[in-house]
Image (cartoon, rainbow, N blue to C red; front, side):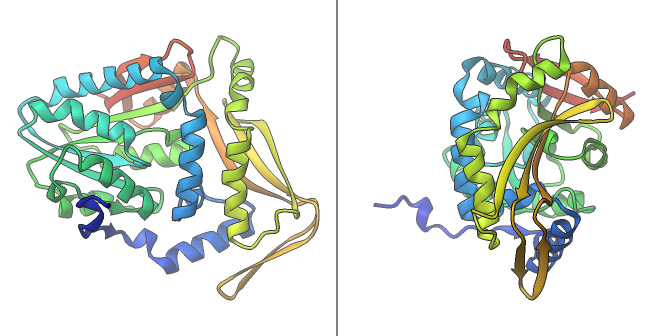
Length: 331
């Protein structure tokens, strides 16, 4: 028997950045440029389920209790900054909402009015997060928002339309920074913050003192059956034959940073038809499906400073592979 939530209509706000025409144009342009924007790996119910399987099997926050500890420490720190105020938790790239829900549980007993905006490019993800949050909040205080942060220059206005004006905003951005170009996304985040707002985010780190060796150490978290299944399911979903090529993982330097990459190398010609548009690939050509930057504490601080941001709280897992941070505007 389904729950009451299963039969309760959900009001979901869809930003123009995720309107079908805009999404199709973005995908065609990106494929012709030889890459897949991260959002397309999550932008369907099928892709959502595939990603959740990867997260369950390989995310340190799901399989390492010490990683859970660092997030709880960050939530406690954020609570100390928000006591007695109306607060809106805005989960940017909310995914399934597991971390956001843990944060809501920390906030709820001490916050007189609490709202939650699960925000993601995937409507399916926002609804999964909505369902998780419904265990703690009335549905009238949960406001799903489908939006592409990288494409939206007016996200602040969209939030103003959804939330009470007096609410202080606590933005979470968990697991997202590694999969976006640092200078692009940090500019967007900086523009969202107002006086009194807080930003919590997590970063995948390279463990140990040797940067390259640390990235090599975590490569198996990406080069595995579950991740391959997730990435290939996107390709088959747009009409690429599963025999048209192979996935190749590696490590790539970009400026002073290192990132893990996954390319699909075509071993035979392939044409993809997308609503009247044709994108063709030759044998030997590569399509960049995925990348994930691995930071160190030093590279992270340098990038933040470049955008007028500074770390005011940090907690790093004993493994050295993940950190949770609270960031504020620089003085």
